[in-house]
Image (cartoon, rainbow, N blue to C red; front, side, top):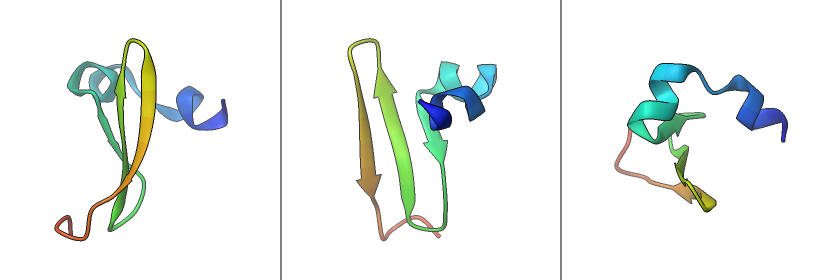
Length: 41
């Protein structure tokens, strides 16, 4: 998964990766969620 390769160690520890102004990935040991969050700016 291309995005997984871009996740740094610190981001992996926090379990959240910001992709853009309103889209981020929350990941856990068993699944990865692509979430649109309009509250993130």
